[in-house]
Amino acid sequence: MGSVPAATPSVREICRAQRADGPAAVLAIGTANPAHCVPQDEFPDFYFRATNSDHLTALKGKFKRVFQKLGVERRYLHHTEELLRAHPEFLDDEAASLDARLDIVATAVPELAAEASKKAIAEWGRPAADITHLVVTTNSGAHIPGVDFRLIALLGLRPSVRRTMLYLNGCFAGSAALRLAKDLAENNRGARVLVVCAELTLMLFNGPKEGSFERLIHQGLFGDGAGAVVVGADPLSPVEHALFEMVSAAQTVIPDSGDAITMHITKGGFGGNISTREVPVFIGDNVERCLHDSLEPLGVGAKWNDLFWAVHPGSSAILDRIDTVLQLEPEKLAASRRVLSDYGNMFGVTIIFVLDELRRRLREQEGVGGAPEWGVVMTFGPGLTVETMVLHATGHMHASP
Ligand SMILES: CC(=O)CC(=O)SCCNC(=O)CCNC(=O)[C@H](O)C(C)(C)COP(=O)(O)OP(=O)(O)OC[C@H]1O[C@@H](n2cnc3c(N)ncnc32)[C@H](O)[C@@H]1OP(=O)(O)O
Image (tube, rainbow, N blue to C red; front, side, top):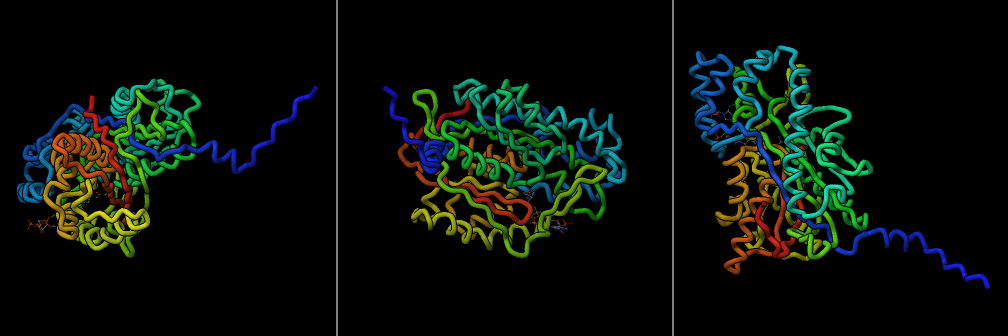
């Protein structure tokens, strides 16, 4: 007697079965920096000595005055005096130094990215071969195959890992990668997405130049680092733990701000413009609209001070402006200020450091019964582009291993 053929499921049923049941969540976080740490108050001496520019005493004085206003106490840098001595072409923006810079970052960026990733994978608790998707961002390089490809070997990922490489997204790159990871995790049942951001400011390094305020900001604000996050839905107990559920993710452009931050590759590394006076104003004028657009559709009606905050610390002027507009209590942006102070602005990597710092702070607050449940990630970058993600804290705030 022949068996009755089972009814073929509809495409809608197949699609539904392919999707996760619950929201994507941050399952683990790892961070890494180069070994070379430069205190900000020692940086002008390091920088002017390494660039043979000690005779530019007035300019050095200006660097010192402005550096004090950025909110940075120390940064980690891949480039040392020794490396700069070996590459005098890095001091001169008219010299063709792009190839030499790309040669260095081609190895150093994947290595730093792997260091952060290994920490995230160790905290996650499952083998690297269980990673199904890889999303990598960097502004520091332009190679094919890129950092994503190098990470397969460095981490022992499966050759069939589905890779996405995001180049040149500026400081919102970390949020863009997390937003993509959320969609991948929710639309592919069982997916485990490794998000990796890595930056070396070597691409931006140049000697001091009279009349170039951008040069001053490039050298004084940005730092090197890498951050990695494992994202997945429906955590497998008891190994996996959701730290933050990723409830919604949005991106928008601030009208008429297209020239406020620009970056492009030149024969001498990176060129571009940061309108340092305008950027905090643009962000301050638009932050409430972005927040309302993200929170209202969810029915999350919390007051700003009832939320936790992970904001990209572009500089202390940007954080001050957000504080003023939203009238935040001082501790609300404390994780962002701490990361800016201890590491500088590491482009898209920075927000991963802020999430890591934030989960430590929330865990401490949980201990005394006062941690907010709902929170917001906000990052900014060229466009001006604002990325907003709504998070829900789950009560599994583990410290980094
Ligand atoms: C890369 C990405 O994608 C995203 C990013 O995060 S990009 C980085 C975003 N960060 C920013 O845009 C920085 C925001 N701005 C700031 O932090 C502050 O404006 C700042 C620290 C740069 C200056 O602080 P301030 O309080 O405005 O400084 P202020 O006291 O007015 O000026 C200090 C000196 O700098 C000079 N200065 C300030 N802004 C200037 C500008 N835009 N152009 C030229 N000179 C400037 C002043 O003339 C003054 O010079 P003197 O000491 O010789 O008199």
